[in-house]
Length: 216
Image (cartoon, rainbow, N blue to C red):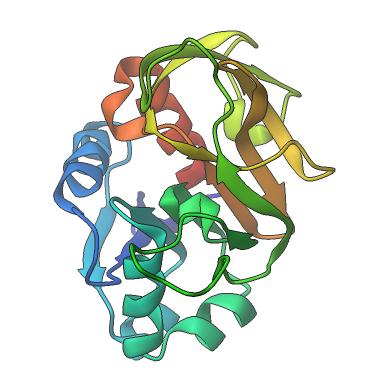
């Protein structure tokens, strides 16, 4: 819930900067919620002391998972993320990195996977979508199980996707999408949540999801 402060509501939502993502679109998506959530305080930061003072965290990711993970390690943020008790929402790669590993290895790498944070069990792999173009780009429907992140959003609502790799459906899956195969579109475990789609690019449905996260 948002915290009351002198008759207003006050909530600090900080965007975690791994140094490897385009953060502005997520920031602007949250800024548009200020008319609904008066007193919303937003910041992009990689400073652990600042992150510790936040009420909620958002972890976006764009590009390659190896670069995002490298940024986390370089900024000494891995242990902080794993052990935080703050509600955290991962977006796109920010969701994938919550899993054990990904097969999206850098070119010329001798490894067979990139290790993730291991918060959620499972391995991210390339979409198996014969006859369909990759990346999976555009609007697609998400069937969800009624998790509070989707409050007010019907199962089957549409969101905007841009990705080539996906997480499998697991016991922590709260939303599914199909593009050649069924995959995790949303996940939740304890205080950690993630969505494969981009709520900041998903119109009113995405805005509602972000607002739901702020109000958890």
